Image 1: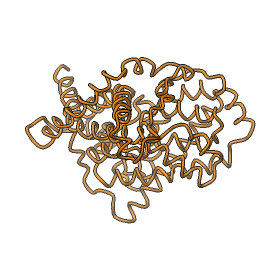
Image 2: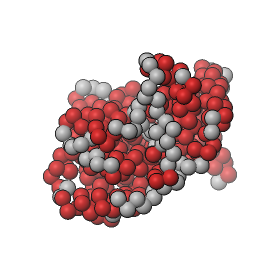
Image 3: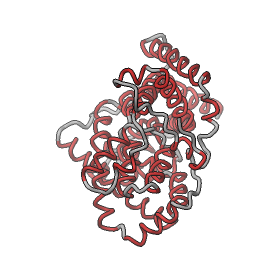
Image 4: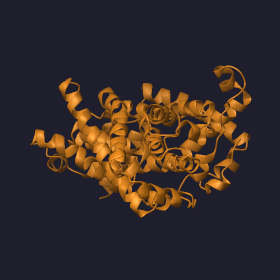
Length: 383
């Protein structure tokens, strides 16, 4: 038992080491984007569920934090400020599926085909969600949800969702980024984004390491119906979100688990559905209940699940028709080890960058803001 535990921990550490520099790069780039994109006009830019508003929601979401809890909290804040509910949910989906750090980590773990599939599948998922909302979201349920939202019951990452440190004035984009205020905002977003998701990342790595070390390949293959290829293509998008729901891991933390599932035999679409499903894990569903009431939480689970599974199946069919589904299942980081190679040198370089950002964060009042990350929205801080 001790040997198995050590093997699981070593696998988790090896995976973490393999993706350390991509994580730092992703969060740094995300921090730069957030530092120059203001939250102030978001609600005004999302007045309805028409194409323009949805496109804006996707763009704003892709420029936001990848933390699922912060995305959910910010979406409720937008609804309370007058944004269209459907557009706010589209923003929420984009925040966890179109952000830079997710794509970088997926590329490191799963390869370019699955990364491209996730990126193209996210807008399809949003489109399916809009159709489902128009068909089934009635006014009474929506009004009940808005009334519950206005009660302001706290979830998680309330303060983080409300913090707007963007630099909207000061000349060109480069000058805003390199200004004193811009560099400070970047350092604050970088550290707080790390603080908001480190538990999910660590949990994802530990669970992935345990599953890779303890679950025999035959069990995965049986569960994912590998011996029945056609059925497996349908089964994967159905079961993928359900595995995510009970994993409790969201945001970029579910990518290591996706790598284990992919190596285990889940279908191409099943991996995508699993990654999409970070917005319906059990802790997030409980927050929906607090934010919008039990009925709306159930409605969001059903419609999100259907949109996620449907989009994943569509992506599976498209990539299969184009011959882009990888023939080999080689999420190489599962067996990675720490050696003096390019990964180690890149980790050292980016750890220096992270150290500089953390140092600036500490010197510019960052710890005080960090303590407000989980406070109710009304107590949030803005630069």
